[in-house]
Amino acid sequence: AQSVSQHNHHVILSEAASLELGCNYSYGGTVNLFWYVQYPGQHLQLLLKYFSGDPLVKGIKGFEAEFIKSKFSFNLRKPSVQWSDTAEYFCAGRSSRAAGNKLTFGGGTRVLVKP
Amino acid sequence: KAGVTQTPRYLIKTRGQQVTLSCSPISGHRSVSWYQQTPGQGLQFLFEYFSETQRNKGNFPGRFSGRQFSNSRSEMNVSTLELGDSALYLCASSWTSGGSTDTQYFGPGTRLTVL
Image (cartoon, rainbow over all chains, first blue to last red; front, side, top):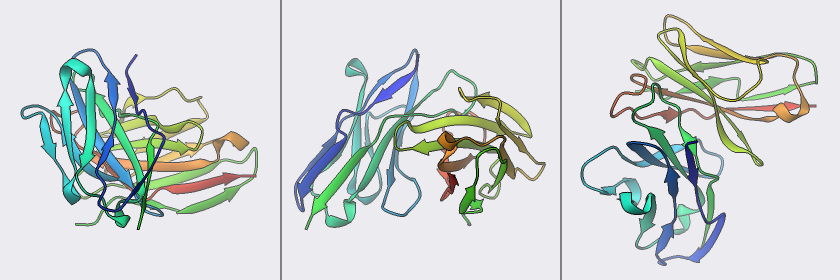
């Protein structure tokens, strides 16, 4: 069965600290991977996506993620966080072979950045 | 370009009632997917519609149904509401269904509370 898992449920860090959120997937075949963010009171927004090509993907707001096929991972990183990065982050995957747009989400990671 | 819109934003219903939620996709998008978000189960895929046809369905009981109109707007219906149906229902739209670079964009959601 297809699955996406996020290791950290909660992360607390100070401004200017570096952030890395883990995401592992279990899919047969080729997979498309996404990171979404949900700021307090706002809707899910796309941070970045990986379909193919360069495994290092850059997204909005200084975020990047690295697709490591051998580790079935797609970790999200930001070198220096700001208070405004406080949000819940979701990793999601979609089989590129299966018909349709069904996304499987990880459980989410709540990130709190202390000013 | 306007984003995905969902109406109503909030709903309070009692057990046994039924409810209809509406979603208008981004202009030009033909695929609409629905997800349920709860604290316990996270984000779970309900179903996807493309060109007025259900493309995919998640593991939800038959009380959950949907449809799509010729203008790509979609509705989902939940009959015989149960307390456990209380959730944030999210709609997402994309250009096509499962295209190699398809990306889903989410609406603000409808918060359903079942009393």
